[in-house]
Length: 431
Image (cartoon, rainbow, N blue to C red; front, side, top):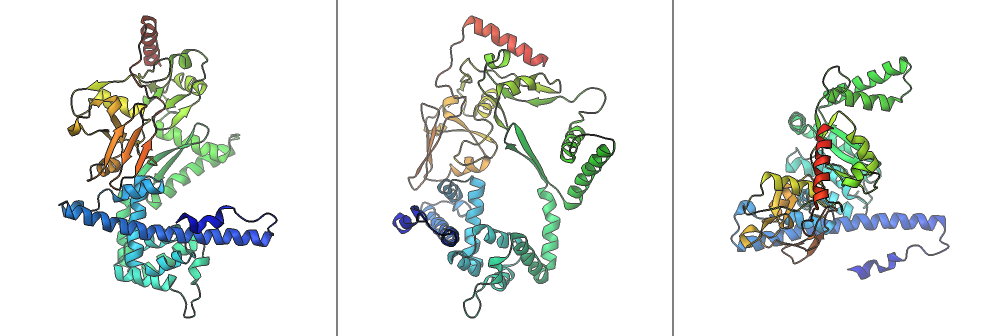
């Protein structure tokens, strides 16, 4: 397989002209599209093989295919959620959108372009989806490429929407009404101790929120406020959601910051960890602790920055141990490529196989990853360094590195350190 692309690895020859370099870029883009099409075929065939094997093993029909999306995700180095979407797209392209798939295989259409078409036709019947697939993506009578290959993404989306409304307006309207159920708020880390706060809202609500913030920015500018429009809008959003600018008692908002004693009380530079975000400079964390508007959860590490290990004899991790694991793993699923928040505390080595309910044998997983590892043929084992090795039914192995706060064995505290810990806990409570 790799020999077929060896001639591409050296790149364009030295002294290549500008035109030749553009040709290289164009050809490589076609190779990417074709590779994505071949991945589509491989994913569908993988699911067919897994379903056949599981059926022979007596797996109930409703569970056939379990774990395939996670295998796709691990192989493509993406999150399990993304892997499930890629597998779903692959099945749609092969079974219902042959012309779109053909464009991909010819190197003329990217996976994202195909995703847009699949998304905009999701509410239609298979027959109507095939009509749109043919109208937009079928080659011309002389084999010429259709117009969609040169459309911008917004143009492509609009073309698919127009056809969908023309073919089945009722389904499009029903889908829009049902989409309101998916409204939500999300938070993602951004560089330089910033975050992206996003909200998926009905269009009228989203426009109303933005208009209110825009109006606040215009009023501030008219009053001589020197902040930029974006700064005023961001500050207004925080003020109105948290109640920070209102008179009276300030809201009690909990933020988990994990840091060493030296980083908290002195000028040590070992980074702190903010759950839900990641590492932050120690100086930033010290400043955050002086903010009277937040309450810092009582968490503490040993002088090396490692959380104290805990264990339990029960199968289910007690609340304290579960919170310990969640904090130790940074609040993020331990599966490679998965950035989903932890929803389950699970044994690495199964409890039924003798796995202990201890910090060394527990991991934080999202619900999808927790369910995937229960499928036939999945195994996992903890490493002494805190890593976790997952073995898929095909025998492929994927190793998740240990979190930064991993401790191989419970640290030994001196009497002086225990006294310092008590002082720190009092300090944190006072904050």
